[in-house]
Image (cartoon, rainbow, N blue to C red):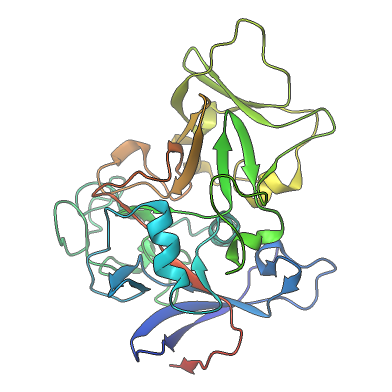
Length: 326
């Protein structure tokens, strides 16, 4: 994968309130369109990802510096706060998030962040300005808290607050997704019973998380007769993979990336394989210390869940919007 240049852009909504976004341009020299630039059956020339975890003003999501991220918001609440800004606006998808991580991996710039009550657990000299509880004001950490370690990167992906993502879930232990990054479309039904959801599959069958006895295995094998599904977390280096082949979608969603940075091995991933629907949050939070990392993943929260350490980030693809660049 080739890293793509990006720049910071200010987008004003119809109320005149700005959001600071990072712009990523679709490469024209690739045979296949990268998954992140697909919006259902459309192809975006560029995507815009919130530079900062979002705040909500009068029901709408905004990306602003020096702000205490909005928390205590449900999955559906985050989706609504993004979509009500107009066409093109959406809750950042799992595919978009993994795209950022892949850039960091390629550049060797896995982001640090607020993972220890205002400072980075592994780099104690790196601190942000504490806002409330253990959260920090957006963008107040050093440049190493950005995904590319420059002032122009996406900020606070590691720590501060967990972030809801669209287009991925686990249902009754099976990994499900919405194809072609269509979760970014305003017309995509993200509800629990939506027909948009599909199971991740290999030629052998559905891909599921097998969780038992403190171990987690991503597998396409049929569960044993005496299997009792559970929920648990393990360090990524302990996450087992037993698949007949690895579907591309599992790479695009960040379940099984093509490659990981060495430091990702310590980061935790959690799966709930019990009956029910569980939505993804990523990036860890201000108290996650030695379990933290931008690739941290939780797939055991229902869409109705909210907490003081759970926020979100909006993204945008241009339809007919005016952009004012800095």
